[in-house]
Image (tube, rainbow, N blue to C red; front, top):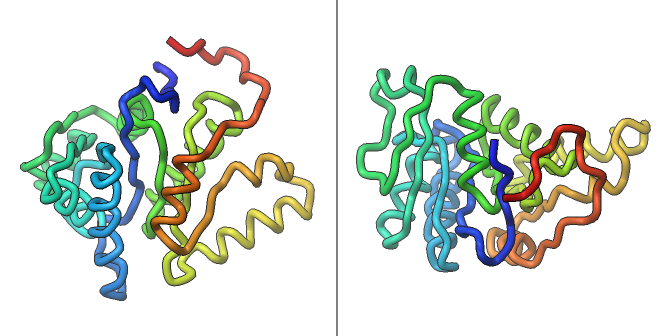
Length: 204
């Protein structure tokens, strides 16, 4: 797998992880739409899971309406269930969820986590782990809308206190309740020095 780069000469695309459901409060869909618009307003493209439902569909629709590039990555099994978004700039259909995450990482220069369920949490922790191991150098931001991720943040802090996460690794996660503040921090983020994980491929 090619390691993504956050350098200025790399394509600037933000990968958005979020739910395929609407959520229990209208604010979730509103913020998903605002996220799509905000990414395009910063001159960047969107990478996401390729679906047409829930927050995922709202992010994609808003970005497309704003004239932006939206690149979806969807496993074949979900495409056959007719959840694929048909109006995207690009849609990659892959065989497995593992391939989906690898492709999304290859395409992206940053990762933004909106509210979501099991899949969103799994994607968040995988890209965070890969950042810790220096498999990629891209910022990972969490939008703590309505306090949705407050308990996740508290658990990370607990893991630091209990000696399972180092403070410098906890600091890799950027958490904000305001979208524009979070995007500003992600834009300004510089990866700290970390030892390369054994077998990590060099940057192309």
